[in-house]
Length: 172
Image (tube, rainbow, N blue to C red):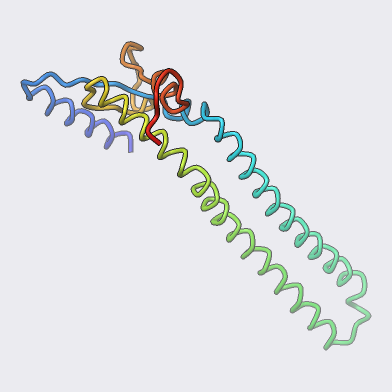
């Protein structure tokens, strides 16, 4: 991945150097911008609450399985074969249900996070584009792309101000 990124950036810079027109670059720390939005904290609390709810459900299912397994270990030798087989089948089904629930929960958590963050990410992208247009910036790259950056090309503060509607209007 790093090699591909290096090749991409190298090719990108080569193409730009071949172009006689001066290109203007900037970078932004979009994570900082995202975290600066007041709604971000609200969305994260909603997400954390959702995760906690799923974890509670999973723990309840696991506790039920442990209780039933304990009952099986304690009383299984006294049960008639049909009852013992039925209890084993029930334990197996509950174990499968727990594993399925855990996998489904992971997918649902990702979907929930995406659903909650999408409007904020759109707002951040809009602010980045707006600043780029206002300042005639040709390319805005993520700060994480670079090993070293000169802070004069950092537009993070401007984007934070724009996205939080500080010192100007925001087209929402």
